[in-house]
Image 1 (cartoon, one colour):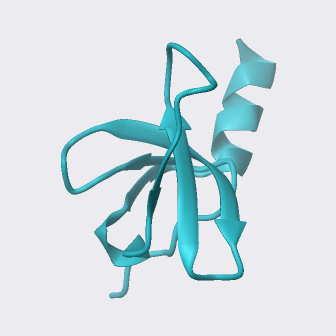
Image 2: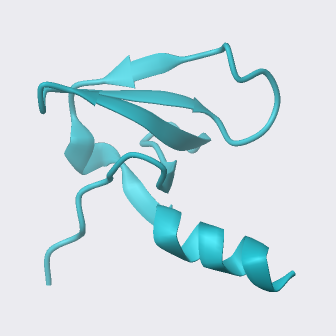
Length: 68
């Protein structure tokens, strides 16, 4: 079974253990990430999307927020 590739809005865990939200994918070569909580202006990039483990998709996060 192959892992789903992270998409914009997904909550992911990086190879370094940090949790982040994918905010942008630049031409399919660089994934822009921001912290799950804290400053939304802090961002970093990875060009290795296979190192990102999708914890929760954007769709799942949004539907969870609607029910709480």
